Length: 342
Image (tube, rainbow, N blue to C red; front, side):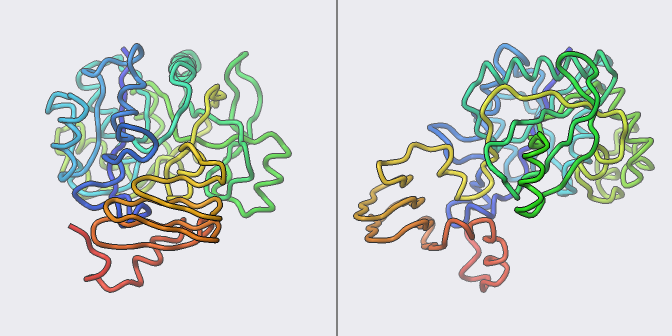
């Protein structure tokens, strides 16, 4: 049977000051009327039932996510510590296999925007079927709409069939010139939407991921805390997909965006006639291409362009849209009494 593993950890620091440890971005209506986590679960309807959806998250989010998503308590897996995506996905896959020895897994993140839900489900079905047919780890590649430097890219290899190809190589977050070259050669964005059979994932981890492989038996024995204590944190991309040769790619047939920074809202939310995205009480005159979010107080903009302005949780943030991805560096430099939110 098909299972879903939804990664919903992280504190969402790049959405400071709206995102807080108790209400991070996964629980915020950033891309639409519901939270990104709720939207992720809803788009699985007709593909994977809620009873076969496992959510991997931190202790503070477990209760809110379980309530919002309507999941059984046993389907919310609480990480003993944050150790990047590979340990989380191995644990989620191991848990699916424990309940269903023939489990195939669709791996997703809880902070995506996807416009075409049926297109997503059709692509997910193809990815799951390709994983079973070719006994490979499958990644979904998206056709780029811009030379994005914040995403990883996939250079495709030989065709396995009409829908799946091998992967020639991965390219992590290129500079602008390299991104243009990748677009010119037909490379795809690495969406982070993955599919595999449980048996294939564990086999490939044992063969190619020394950060985790020695500790798989600890997990098999049911010692989740010991597994997370002993593994070396590593992402699934770096720790496995870039090392394994048993990888395939299928093309996504839907519009996708990673809601990773304030700037992303300009791509996924409705804009006014001047290109502004606003939430809350906002008045703008001669302002263009700004992202403005007011939790409480009115915000007035005049004769400015390409700004992010956020009022939330007793803080006000003003930065340029092009620097929105540098928010973590800003937070690291701020005094704790100003930075930290409840």
